[in-house]
Length: 566
Image (tube, rainbow, N blue to C red; front, top):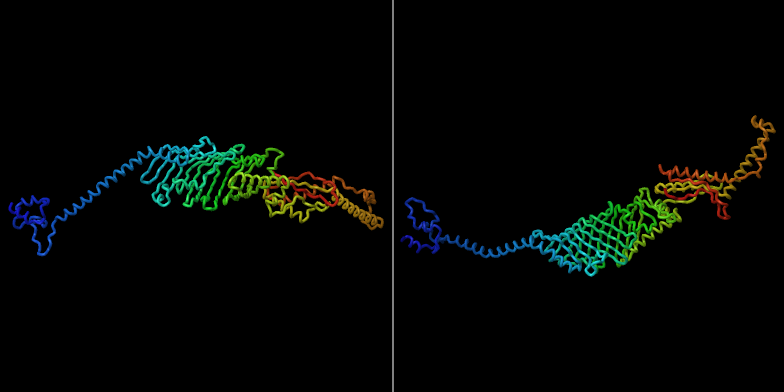
């Protein structure tokens, strides 16, 4: 006990007991030769002079600091854990219960339209909000307005970003609409166009990037009779709104049957003064879907047809310039009346050997009513074609094939049925045009002029009679002189009545025969120049005797060519 009291007085460690100190204090000292632990507080080895003794109390100082740090972090950590718990619980429980109603009210106030959202969910780890089965109705000011669009979506996904909020002031960085639907209706003097980019720029919740997946669009034009309806499905693409309120878009969709539409372009901001550009590509669009616009202007019925092409739109200073390169394939038309324009002939004149009708359409439109001006330009183009096909089909064919020199009349020398070199070249050009227009037919009609050809035939007969008289006189002289051969000496003298010039005449039968010979000569030349299997496009017509030519108008004999359709 005395040793223990002495130790407490001299022990520099202090009053705090060390673990196991009571046991060491009560234990007897070790025997001679026994090993004493180096770190034993009771039997510590003497330290060299001048060396500081490091008390083991330093370990208790580090542990105390750790306990102090733990005490400082405990409550903030507990608070963070509680907040995280409530955040996750709210995202999984409270958000689906309260978000649909709160978001609907916020959007209704912003858009002034009734908004319905069936369900909402929040994914906290990804910072993503998903809305299910949403409907945006017409304006509250006119809830029964049929022109106003009706919008809905199956799911709407919004990705929030703190960086986007700090940089651009928009909490939503990207938005995706799955299975969206829009129904647009147009009536007289009422329009339902998509909103201008400044409208989207004013929406704080409108994202920088909008993605569309498998959406649909229904459009009805009540101004047409019958009503024009067009449905697009599988609409996919993206719209990107830049800080300058410039909207870029790239969309693709499927139309009726297997048609495909692609639209891409740029719409500038309202105050930037930029140029709007867009390009529309169509592939295999059925013309029957556009019949409400085309049939009244064609005065016919569209049985079949497909439209392919590319359209470029440039808008600046209130004007829209359209340049279109279109191709119509597999077209089948039917005229509504016999007095109407020759639609089948027009189709044959324009259809190439690939059974396609390529053409260009350019128009400069007013932005206020672009669709009416475009339809006016289309009507003018169709009317020009129909007039040319009815009045002068060769001129229309010559415009479509400017590299060929075409003619409607093959001329012959008076009284002749032999083709000249120039006429043969013209027939070769005509055959080349028929080869490039598989639906086109050519009617051939031989013509003989009653005045020119009759006089030429009379001259030929007189020359033949004179030649025959000379031969007869020479044969008679040889018979009288006995210088002729045995055949000439044994025959009686030839009769002189058929040799009288006054008995020579040319009848209408001979003129018809001349016209038929001319027609056959042209037919043989065309058959030789046409491709194999195109002989059925040649349609011979009965020969014709033209009336007497007027003075100064020349001869009208030859072969007339007339274009038709198969």
